[in-house]
Length: 314
Image 1 (tube, rainbow, N blue to C red):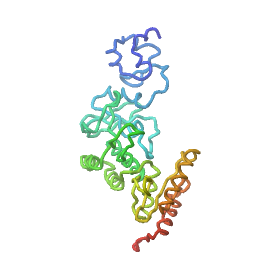
Image 2 (image 1 turned 90 degrees about the vertical axis):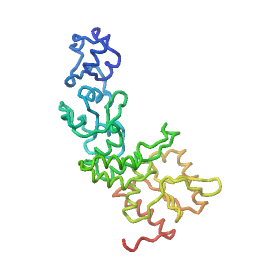
Image 3 (image 1 turned 45 degrees about the horizontal axis):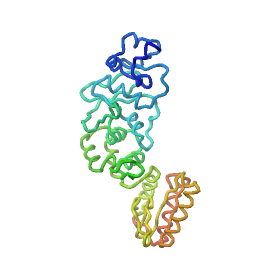
Image 4 (image 1 turned 90 degrees about the horizontal axis):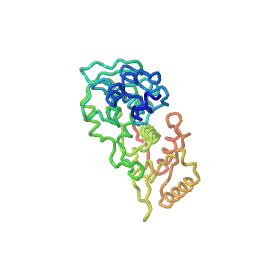
């Protein structure tokens, strides 16, 4: 390894391009060293490199061929977007290239040829990658509708600065509508428009989105989502879903709710609702099986007890 010691430290922990190595002072002899492995034309790595994050593995592929960016399932994974995307676990790297240039053809790469506007691509620590909204649109053709709605809710939700370090959503409805209007006619665009129409601002998790979609399809009223609700003087809550007209609050209990401290908080929350005359409906993961039928039944019964009646047209 002595012959490689003059290479920058970053080259020892992640793949790099030959041009980067030569610019950094790497010689032809160093790049032909037995510990240097060729991943693809113009891309090298050291054979002792441990498994590297997908973003670092993908980065050089977006540099060796111009007008290229990580996209589709690769971008979906790097952005850690929620929802089930078929094929996302396959090891192939997805790279989109700007039309009219030809798509990338390399071993281990699925190439796409598309139209990319400048605001649909960003640089993430040296990696050229499609933005979150553009990635969402690119995945529309292969994602099931509900999973696409889950991803859209994720992009639209208002973040909580204290926990996430940001105060603006990844996208707004108008921005996503503009994106879809730009690309009329591409594969999956009809489904993307339908998903955006079903998306709502306020869902904090995939299960909350699934629950909301299930209740709406069952003909229940559309709930408010994580809306601040004043129960009594000085007491306010933000139920996952709420029906103020009927004083029904729905709370989805995730895995953290088994923690003793969380259990105590949940009991206090339940008491707050009861004192204010509200009925709390607690939904567990087991209620979400079979398209959330059990969850829908629990919420429907609570609403019925409070005076709601289904539409006679259903």
